[in-house]
Image (cartoon, rainbow, N blue to C red; front, side):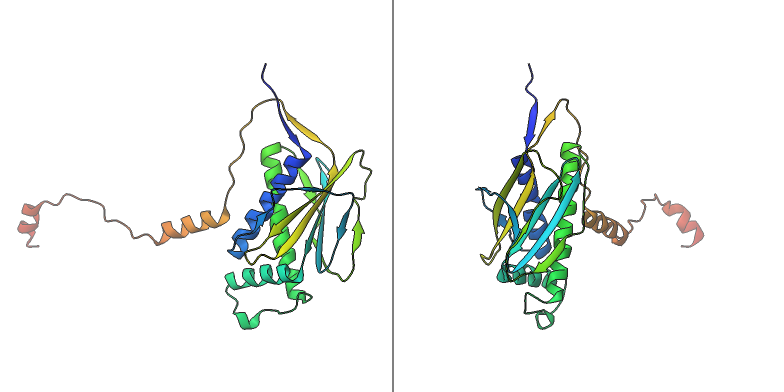
Length: 224
């Protein structure tokens, strides 16, 4: 008898970690890796220097918290803006600047979008989320999911940037399992950048002259 595939809470956490690592690495053009070890925690909390939280709802309910040190926040912000073409002289130098919070909020929005798309493709489950909220903090703030969870679980994973700065991801959600009963085809991921690049390459490619057989005798008769 075929054994059904089971996706657990920790599998969902792994997909979230992959979204964080993949999106941030691509956006900053520098490696962002996560630890292979996961820590069980009792509660999620926003911690200094910059905290971000996103609430998920739909197929499952969860709270995602990201806590950045000021070094990690500035490194991600500066790497992203330099890749976007901004000069180093124009970059913010304080983690509490509005520009840093805005950029990190945009990056978190990209991460969340990648994660929700992955869940929809791989689990056939639809989830929605609120806009990521960024806060510059000088003290710890405890957060909980605004709903009744029967068997709440919380996890913490550490991430490392190219310059070895650390930030932490925390996930709180109900203990859950998704059981695959039948095989299904996953929709391929459409990369907008690749589509645009392919279209530009096609439009800029020189037109090849069509091969036409020329009657040389006819050209001689016409004096050409």
